[in-house]
Length: 120
Image 1: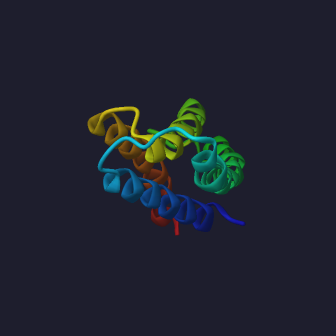
Image 2: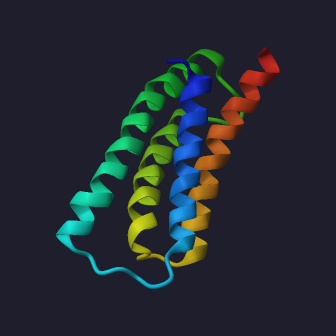
């Protein structure tokens, strides 16, 4: 897999999380059934993609040394992705905080894609 396709797939999955979060009207009860049936499979799917993306992004940052993207941001992005996936089911944080997390992740991934496009 390359960084471009992995990034685009990850963005798509994160947008699905955002859509899910926005469709929640009331906070669902945290049950084992919800966790094993919906949360865990979605979390594993997104985190598998994120774990493919991370080494590619880190290698790209080390090689290209972009001006506005640093290795610490890649690590923070992975942590934020975890939160986005989990919060998209439970709505334990307010809407603004969720959207800030989503925007932060989206910014890093799109910035990488834009830098790659500039080179190509």
